[in-house]
Length: 138
Image 1 (cartoon, rainbow, N blue to C red):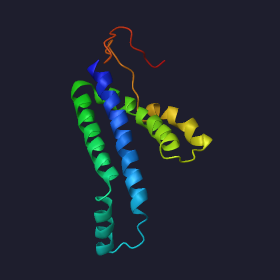
Image 2 (image 1 turned 90 degrees about the vertical axis):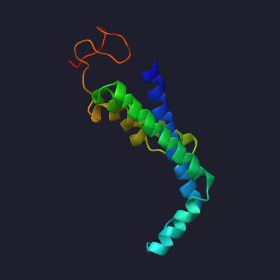
Image 3 (image 1 turned 45 degrees about the vertical axis):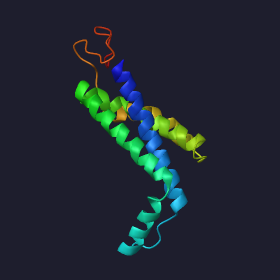
Image 4 (image 1 turned 135 degrees about the vertical axis):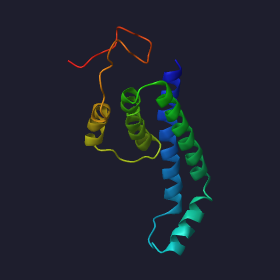
C-alpha cells in the first residue's frame, strides 16, 4: 500500500512540479540575452512568480518520495513504474497547459516503461505483495 501511495506521489507531484515550473517560465518569458547579468535578472523574475515556488516544492516532494521508493524496492521496479509520469505529463500538457499534442506523442508514451529497462520480477517477488503471482517476460 505504501509503495502505491509513494508511487502516486512521485508521479503526480513530479508532474505537478514540472507543470508549475512551466507556467512560471511562460510568465517570465524567453531568455534572449545570455550574459550573466541578464541571466540573473531572468532568475530574479522567475523567483518572484509564485508558480515557481510551487514547482520547487512539488519537485522536492517527488524527489524524496522517489528516494523512499528506492529504499523499499529494487531499482528494477522503481525506474520503470515511474515512467507513468510521462503519461501524466502528456495529460497535464494537454489539459492544464493547453498545449497541442501530436498523435505520435500519444502513441509513444505507453512504451516508456519498457524503454526504461523494465525487468521481470524473479523468485515470486512483487512489491505489490502478490508473491508467486508476479508476471514474467516470455
